[in-house]
Length: 166
Figure 1: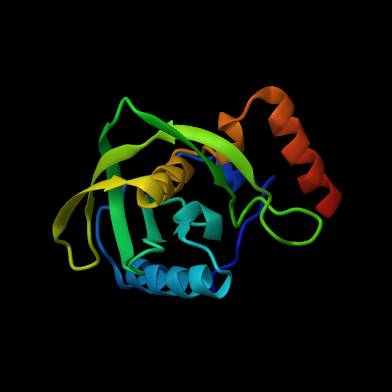
Figure 2: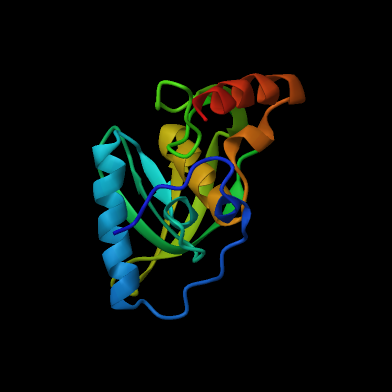
């Protein structure tokens, strides 16, 4: 049974290793992560958030409810156009045990490539909310949290809320 890791856990700061073989353990983790994401009303979850330092994630397009299980995802290009949107994270919780939100600027569109759970190569151009989600989740695979993209003053405001939880 996988457990959610929270801000402060060092596993969230590790750079994840590529998945060499799509094992039954990886497939099981992907399924469990989809269930956890849905249970917590999230739209994405990356392996380090459940303590696994491998490059895989799950995400859902909130408009279509399409679920993606991405193994070794890679953003191959990003638009010059940016978009400022509110982001939260299931690993960055406030004193009410709910995600803390802050506005983050990211590219408005990306092209992402990955391997699906059947071992097939996939690719997609994503914009809007799906682009935001895949960028947020792939950041986790490199040990980055959305709070790292905030201005220092805003980051400290978010971290005060996180510290109140403890």
